[in-house]
Image (cartoon, rainbow, N blue to C red):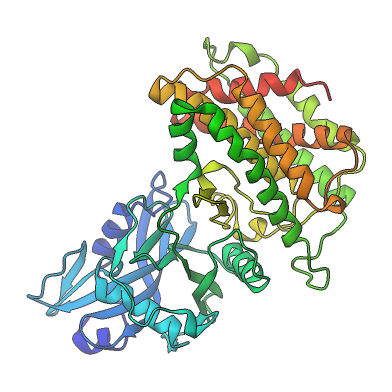
Length: 466
């Protein structure tokens, strides 16, 4: 790879061994358990042509099993001797290639490109940068800083104004987060951080969303952290906020169901086949999880009860009217909401990252989101005891559920949820059971000390009067 190739955005000759080592070391690389056979750049584009260069690349990660994944790389290029304050990928032919989002000048460049509505030609496709309102950008882009808790994506905050999320794992199709944020921003839904801009790749290789830019809410508190803090100091105080969270959730689902003219958002009647497929899929997951449960004290309340759990799930086939399916958040819990000091804001509309993008765009019962938040109350109460030694009142979870649900039923569009308390209770039980079984598998694999949380949830749902 020579200097002229870099200027043209050609990183195909970047050393595969070095590139593989770099990708495997990133926190956003999601397949660390798999055997990586190699990494190569399939297409790239120079986004900033003045030194230091910024190059966006789509890299194919190949696995020993013959499968592959596609990742977005944002790479800086400086002349040799101009050492960057960032992770170096490679040093070749008088140039240093490094992690670009760590460079303030390069992180700013992505915002400038969105404000300018710029289209950049890649080797095979194009990268389009777009804005909702070019006049909404600050006159001077504030100094960027990376968000410390990087996981499957990379986020950068610009002063107190903007936050960029760059998607690292790239899949074909529009990302549901962009899709839902555009819709909710267009209708001025007040309980989100509005969309400011986005960028996407299109070409023979793939059509995919690469990142979104939103307003940043600097003085907001993460719902999970706020709950842990207030459960320790004033457990009743946090309960007073949960009715409002239920109302905001009801408003969110109603807003997402408000445009019957848009086929991507119009509410639909669920087909019998769709309900049967859901039941069959979750039934299989239950069977697999319960097949080899280790005989431990924590699991004793559910040992040998796999068939009972499966039978409870089958209630969905006899729940009567189940409402309609709509676009939903898809991964709803206390960590996905912020308290601004005055009201709640909902974040992170990607859906469950382990599910394929196309599946995350499916319409679902809004009660699936509700069930996720209800399970979050169980988790935060147990986490307060496990991590902080907090003595949580015995009835705290039940009171939290009641406050949230009262607010939700008050403001949700009644045409999209089951009619009558019995139908709602049955459907919520099914979705909570699905979530608790997923949690059980996760905790068995990652946090064995926490398995008591989903176990208690499964027992409660088995004994629920529905």
